[in-house]
Length: 488
Image (cartoon, rainbow, N blue to C red; front, side, top):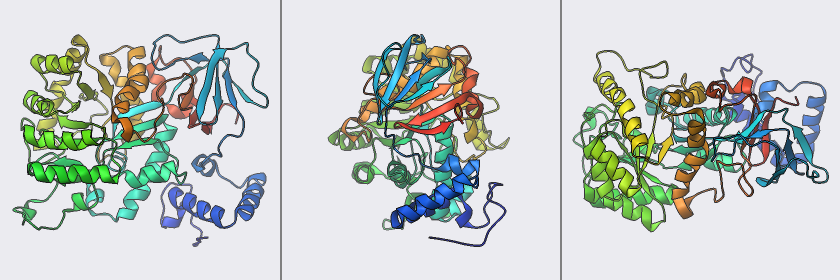
């Protein structure tokens, strides 16, 4: 349907022309499929028979929906809720759901595709509860200046890679991910399930205010800033503005809302100890969310920021690195979720330039991480996990390795439960705004068939998750097999 001159850069991963990007080629194939299915299938068959499809092209394809049951046998099952592997059972997938987890001696359904796991571990797909689908794969300068089409193509390619790292679900916590989610759900692009928040709502000078100083003071009827116009963050001051911006994100399809409750590392105008928004402003967002059956989560580090948000009705805290014991007790008493990250000074730290205010804030935040997790364990807080990778395309490949660094505070089985069944429990707080109303993060009957076949036992060696190319032999999402390195 669309053509251009051949280029040698397709295999190299760089694209001198947009037509050679994997995302565009998938779109081109879909359009041809719509206009001439017979011609498309005939051509694809001929190319496949001639060995002309590259491995990269095959990996980028959307698999056909299964037409027969799939049975995983000879596997040890990590079910997403228990740290003990289950032996002597097999898993039957029918359509996009798990039909049964049953004794291995049962007869396979007629015509089933039987996969012998060779004693490997079958587990739920991983869930990243704090991901930025639009902001992780590009530097901040590109996000603030590049054409929006380029941003979406980069995000689409990163979504494919995210799925092939074994992350079958993510909660997106700031960014214009609505279109990407729609494309994935419609089968236009491979990627994880997305629970989108839309734009993070922030006060003037808050963590989500990325305007430049020359844009302040802003006129009452000033045009939207770049960050606002692309849907990365929305500045709102006062109850009325917060109500408006919250309702807009719900209109666009937010499964939950995110507000900035305190200072941040990446933002330039707010000290990390600054508390942002009033209880009344939080209550306005919470009322909007609860009217739609969902909840509000907030970016917050300090006791004051966390406690003010909780008094305003917020049900989840992102980060919390600088919390104190009193705050932990309040969170435990009220059943507030802590969605935190392994922020420490290590190879995944993404450090800001030495001597910069951002670097100083980062060091302050790092210093509180050990205490925050100790308090979370002491008071048995409901704890979720996410990466929160921002503005660093070189870091996204480490998504699974970053999960592994949680071994500083938790056992391997606790980490795996947190990143599967535990994160799924938190995602369910979206209630009727849950875009995928079914069970995820578990291997049990009636759950979505989002599954990984792992070469080894991650309850013994969590480092297996750091190398998905080598160790994930099968990746299944919604009953479709996106990777099969077991059978070729």
